[in-house]
Image (tube, rainbow, N blue to C red):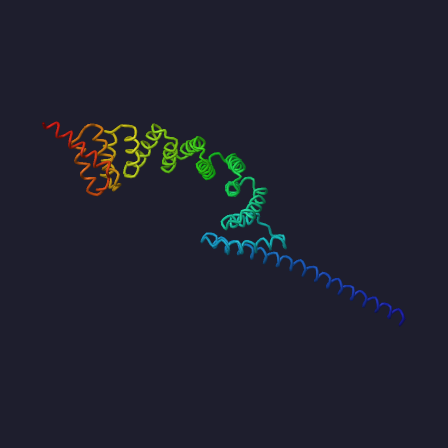
Length: 307
């Protein structure tokens, strides 16, 4: 009987120890899982904090500090399950701002491989290609970005500026036309279109564009001066005088106005008016030999009329 009791006690002890071991193992498993959750949460929180900090540096144009902070996020991503592909764009653009185009290209391409729908990914990658003077690839990248959203102003404006920098004025004009169709009240697009037509010396088109610009902002004296200048170049002197006069009324102090108004009167053979304007102009510009000679000519013509 004692022997049976001894065996029963041993069995109880074995069961108790087995239960303790199971509890201990279970505790370790739970601890490991919870530790993983806690560590993962801490990593994610740290990464998000670094992203906020990096953005502050970036917005203040402190690109070296921004890059240093963004790289900490990348380190967390390499060691944990935390993942945010947008950090690759932040790193790439930071390198781009710092002039390290090789590393910028590496990160921007990595980002765009995972974010085919990001307009800014295409804009930044195209800009990077431009820095390398890989202009064909830059144009291709911009056009791929346009396909994502043909009504997106940012990508079309970036493409337009690219064409302007490349001297591809016909293509730039096409993009300005599309931008104006998307934002018909945007003055900067009309202004850019007018300046582009000036580069190819299409004065009639310049006139048409600036006439619309004047309608958009009738109180802008600079627009009036631009419009009057092209009217003058086209030989529409009465119209030019009217617009120059309106620019003066609106407060323009452009020193060239009196000269051009005087020249307009001169070419209209309205010599009395030309004389008055030339004299007014020479008070502030006494060394302008061209106007001095014209003033002498005007005086001679007026003297001939009185004889």
